[in-house]
Image 1 (tube, rainbow, N blue to C red):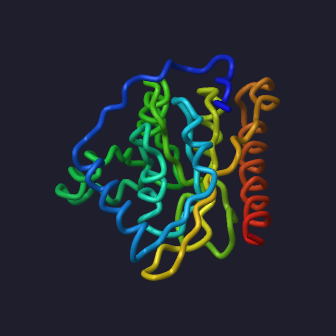
Image 2: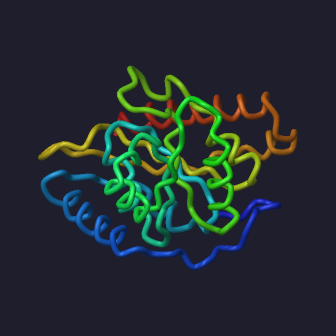
Length: 218
């Protein structure tokens, strides 16, 4: 059943801008994820049921995680947040721009990146964020950066979590589980402030720990 758009949603869905490179990468990684680096997707119907704008969030294990999400999301091309250091090389910056990456300075307040993210959802697009902010953490969602929670609260758009259970490796199956949208209507009603942002960060963390517990047994 399609998700009901929350009251105050920022924009009606627009036709997503598609780039040749994004489409090519989605095809190539899709082939890889069906052959020598298998990724098994679960509950992708929850993605198909979502109308933009919304935030897709995921835990972060490897550099190919954005492509795991991109392959699963056929209706839209996701605008991902990535670390600004990747754009120092002009060629790489051009490639990442074609892949819709929004550069952000990590672990600091980056107002230009925040404005770009808000514009994505205002334009009726999908924004992809890795709330942990970095890879190789000792445990799942050990830290949750405030960015995803702040944008979700300000823009009043759904939060769709995806849990990736392992790094993508050759001849090793990785599972990508799509969870239910995280409900934060009660927090939104309290306004956007430090307390509600922190509470939503904790709710994101709890959602992932619950997904890990549920899906690891399957």
